[in-house]
Amino acid sequence: MIREVIDDALARGERLKKDIIAEIVTSATLQDLINNKAFIDTVAKVIHTKHEVVSTIRQNVQEALRVMKIPSRSQIQRHERRVLQLEKQLDQLNRRMILKKANARKKTHKKIGKMTLHKNLKKR
Image 1 (cartoon, rainbow, N blue to C red):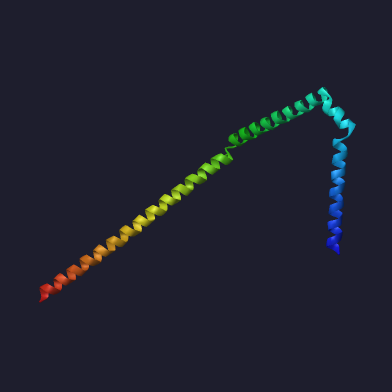
Image 2 (cartoon, rainbow, N blue to C red):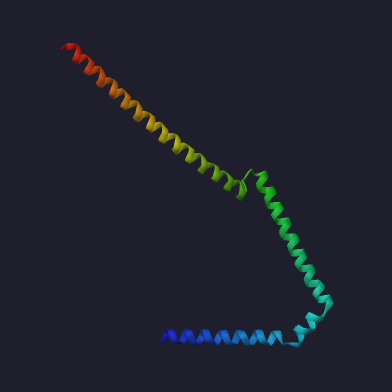
């Protein structure tokens, strides 16, 4: 029941939205504005000015971050990649060290075994 009411309200809202958009698009006032060169030029200037303002704000923010010595997103990403690379290298070094220690232990055990065998043979 509630679901039907909600679905019906949504459908009516969509129809109303379509009707309003159709009315605006076909309105004489909109057509007059679209055909008015001064209006189009003004809209173009507003859009251009908006882009200039956005660019200026970005530059000012970047400069402020630089002055405060706060890294940019790209710098952080570069450092993150470097940390990951160093972690991999460290893991590889640890594995090599573990293998060398294991091999050294094996050699030590072999030497001890040979020495013990040699001592036992001498005793006889």
